Length: 197
Image 1 (spheres, rainbow, N blue to C red):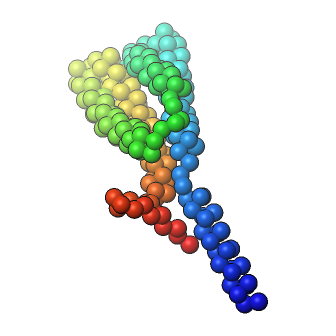
Image 2 (cartoon, rainbow, N blue to C red; image 1 turned 90 degrees about the vertical axis):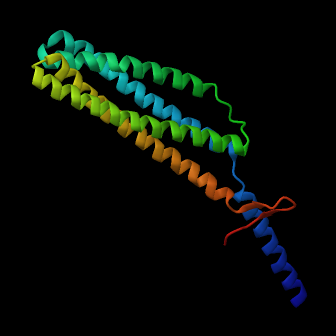
Image 3 (cartoon, rainbow, N blue to C red; image 1 turned 90 degrees about the horizontal axis):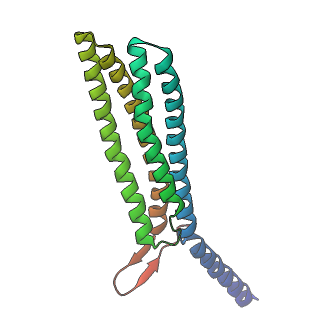
């Protein structure tokens, strides 16, 4: 009786370990699907921001004057570029493959996150240029420079926030992938999987 009970417990333990091992293997197709969905959602947000700014800016620059006119003018012009980036970004993502190796998946995350950090640095530069134009416009009494400067601060601020949030969301996804594969070790001659309990 004791031998049967011991055998039963041993089989249950091994079966449970096998199930845990199966669950700890990353589902790369789902991870890539989630990654592409996050990036696509980001392009929708950017595109929505761009369309809103183009519409409001187009109306605003025909209905106002002075600094406000130039503020709207720059918003509309700036966001034609944003709309192009969002459109090309979304198009590129819609043709992305879900069938990537682990290495390729990690590289996709790494490259995208580096682009976002680089863009965040550019966004700070846009705000700094906007502040310079605003200040120079006040000194020169130029409505155009003041309006353009205010617009660049707004657009740079939005893009900075957008890039940082998208970076953090992507980083969260990639971190869960890395944590999932940290338990897999390859020594060159053997492969081992650690199953945390």
